[in-house]
Every structure is written in structure tokens, then in C-alpha cells.
Amino acid sequence: MSAVAKRYARALFEVAKERGLIDQVETELKSIVDAVRQNEDLTKILMHPHISVGAKKELISQLFEAHVAEVTSNFLAVLIDNGRESDLENIANAYVKLANEERGIADALLTSAKPLSSEEQAEIAERFGKLLNKRLRFETVVDPAILGGIVIKIGDRLYDGSIRSKLEHFAH
Image: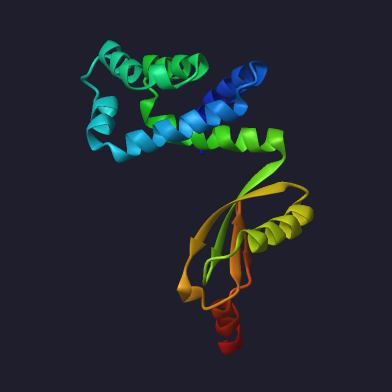
């Protein structure tokens, strides 16, 4: 992640924290990133070098201003003013990391061979949360290819308790 993305995320985070809007701004950033990612025309317009800053800001204002906090709206305008539209997703990711640190949360990807009940997820979150001294927030994926067990990715750490992994280790 670029230093620029981290700087922008830090600036946005500080303002959001000051105003008690950390969670709301996070949700809004994720929604905006998703909207841009899912709309090819919007992406092209935002990234096009020959479309004026004013036109881009007007479009963003029309699309998002009524749905987001003033902090988020102003931030988007600053991004466009500074020609940093292409950094939006990286900035949003850096913001989420800052917000998670502030709240003592870690985002984790939990992969299992079959869907897990909410009780099973809660038990896994509690065990790994104690290990990391954080509260875990899971995104879950079902992948029958792991055969059984679970794989948890937290940041750059991977905890592989899958049957496939154990069989691969056994085979070597």
C-alpha cells in the first residue's frame, strides 16, 4: 500500500474520529468503492484524464452527496482536486485498517469446506481473538476443495487447519 494512500486514509480517519463517525465513514467508503468497481462507466469517467475536475466533482456530488456524511463527501472532492481518484480503493483499505486498530478489531477471512453455524463462527472468533488480543470480524467463504477443517487468514498470517493441507504435508 502506498504512502500516499496511508496519508490520505490517516487524514480522513482523524477527522472521522474527531466527529465520532469512524464506523459510518468506513461503511460509506466501502459502498463507494463497490459502486465504482461495479460500474464500468463511472470508473472510466473518474479515471479519464481529459474529464475536468469540476465535472468529476459534480458527478460524485450527484451520486453520493445525499447518501454520505459531509466528511466523506468533502474527502471525495479533495481526492478529485488532487488527482487521486485511482487511489480510492487503497485509501479505503488503509482507512479500514486504522479503524480496526482503533476498535481492537481484526478482519479475517474464514474458509471452510461447508457452511459454519453462527455458533461455530463465534467460537472460532473467540479462540483466535484471544490469541491475537483482538475481536475478529469474519468474512466467510465455503470452499469444498479444502475437504474439511478451516483456513483463517488474518492480515498476512495464515492458519491452515484444512484436511487438504494435512494430506499434502503427509504426502511429502
